[in-house]
Image (cartoon, rainbow, N blue to C red; front, side):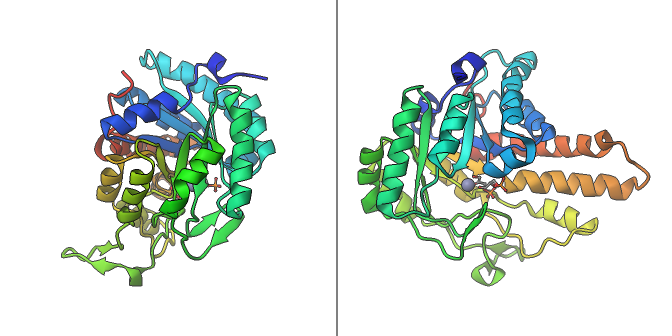
Length: 332
Ligand code: G3H
Ligand code: 13P
Ligand code: ZN
């Protein structure tokens, strides 16, 4: 048993309370490898932003869960080395799919877990989430639950259509489970193809603008649960310059459309206090690698193409923190 407090990590409780009061959101960035983690920590340290490091089931399978945990422990020391005296770093399980996975993460130093029962029946979701909360709270680990289903693919589970969160269920869910935060479905989805072009309208510059998120549902949820931390998954904006670079250098990413950053900024000012971003980092990494390799075809030193990828991801993370989520300077 390793408690996250001994690793210098923090849970989400205080972080979320401050974010709601302050009208900003905490970035939750997924990581699967060293370069992503370095870029996240460099960005958070430079901007003094609290940050959530997210580990998905896919990341655990790819990189090994134990190794990722040790990397997160190393990240706290790295942040201090970079001059961030009191780093506020959460290690979070993203889309935990069973009690056993959540328990294993809690027992091994995670400070926060998500139990994603959104594909279960309401009663099964309540029972599973409560079981995880009862275990996690013994160790002061915070728990994110989910109500409503996002369209798109999450690991093996995929749904073609959204099922928006029912505002009239949230009080019952939070009361019965005791969860610390709630992920909701208001029109975001995972991946780089969040909307079909035919769902969008063209603005004056010819850029496709997706239909807006269901802010009316978010407002109803806030009325039901005043001051309760809300989480947005699937919140990548899919920067079109990165998509263009990927396609220019041999890629084939079609119809990639994300959530406009203005909508995320608006959400961050509300009770939404955790915003999940993974796809944008994948795009930034891929664009830089494709460019570096295309421009230097004789290169075979990974540092020469993963280095620019790390720089590009860092730039993206700083931009999200400073210009979109508003979390810069909140962990001085
Ligand atoms: O919600 C999904 C995250 O983007 C993680 O994706 O399961 O492919 O690691 P992954
Ligand atoms: P994106 O695919 O929009 O980056 O969403 C990531 C996410 O929700 C991780 O849980
Ligand atoms: Zn997600």
